[in-house]
Amino acid sequence: MNYTLKQLQDRVNNLIKEQGEDAHCAAWIYTKEDCYIENDDGNPNYVALNNPELAERIFNDVGDIDYIYTVIQECVDEVTEEQFMAIQQEQEQD
View 1 (spheres, helix red, strand yellow):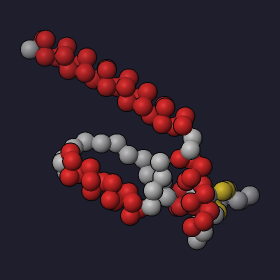
View 2 (view 1 turned 90 degrees about the horizontal axis):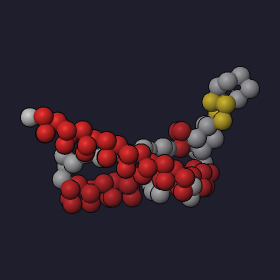
View 3 (view 1 turned 135 degrees about the vertical axis):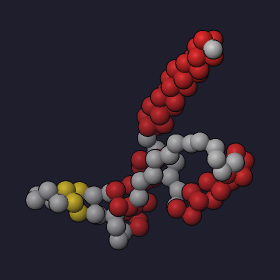
């Protein structure tokens, strides 16, 4: 999943309408400023900073890596179960 910032803003605005502005969520946002290659001297070369076509290609490729979404969902599932069980145990103790 990759979007322009405007598309992301629209998606977030729709989520706010559906779930409310105080609904909790998690997000990871990377932009062209995160796309760099270290030079020989260790300094970053921001290769996509002034190259929107390269930025689009990078994020299209990253967005096609299913492994990322699988790992994130597995983490959400695991923590959901852990926290749900913890709340149930706390409620039983009260």
